[in-house]
Length: 582
Image 1 (tube, rainbow, N blue to C red):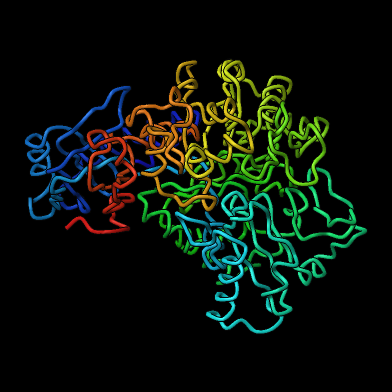
Image 2 (cartoon, rainbow, N blue to C red):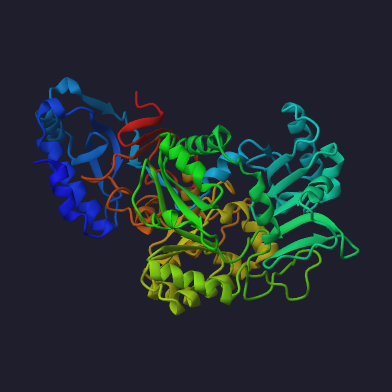
């Protein structure tokens, strides 16, 4: 029987049921197909295979794959016999893992593919351990070197990414004056590591038409000099976002390069499903072009800017299936800012507020209730999945109240970052099916800063409360928010297991989780949160042959050494796209 004769009869099912039944059908056809049709078969064995099926670790000796799909998982002897029956032995590739560890391909629960690729071409301003910029002087040296190395002509804007005021010796943001010293009159903009603040030099402020008369936008701040009027170059939140859109390539091959570059960076860390976690209307055509030209090496999940205006053609694709590895999963809303940047919307004050902030400063929201609720209501009416950036507990409460008031309960809303939250809020989230995706790497990169400056010890101990989320019955994921931090999944898992800060402190020891639970958060849980767990996230018959090969087993190494584990190969749909299996 032809597959095309069967599939129409099950297409009326829900998306998850359709994927599940189609997977079973494809597996049945693969097993029954004549030898002449059975090309692209591989048998993986000879290592530690962690299937990520179930609440406790399940191992397999071998995995049989045909044409990008897993058709059998089990003991090596049985699968070798099945492979021999499928086709002549010579046509089934025998993949010897040579003692390596194989898991399902990692899934990026939240990141920014296009921005990652774009930032890779900018001046690199990260502090240790990712870079070398630990002072204003070092930042100026890095910018000057970037201009010289790239032979930038006069007048061409200079863009940098990754500076971190919390890690600079001066413990402050650079200003326009600091940038003017090295810009040579060129427009210059450098973005904070959080992506929520930036600094412009005088020429860039002029280009952006930001003057002493420019008012702060709703949900954003233009920081001023001592006179209270003149912009000092530092922009926060919505004051920045309306400007940085002009930095993205407008189309053509120049627009494809960042997407390809970003995808390559992800696959080197074993990621087989990436996310572009907030896409503007001007950037969507670039992703479509990349997909149409078959330049997406991995599945790419897109979240559309929820407050933007989208055509009916695009709106109809929200929640749909992949086309050439591109899919719109839902809409993204950012309800507040960054805890490390001290712009997250908190219920209680920031212990050490930013310079110039009023007494009792506790961050601020990006949306009023009147702005937010109509968007949430529209999402509920259209059955769109909502992904909401909430870093502070006040922002988390705004999301909880909004989900309850606008018909989104039970629709698997995703609370992205969810850094500062309370146990009671986690219980409310469980009731409403708001699932958290925690940026747990904060414990390492900014844990000391949160404890001493941005949040205080009590709140810092409870950031990214993984263990508590599991205890109340939630199904959390963890993410890197790339390019805020690199898409290093083993460092991410290490952070979830250890919660060590850069000073060596353990931030919130009671919120540590097992290595297996942490691995679930970057595999099967990550697939489940985006309704793709019938198709990926574990090694099981009928699922995609997406794998990552590691040089050690995260379940058996010293937990303190998990971050040292290296990705040796990445396999997407049965094809090795990074590294080697030889």
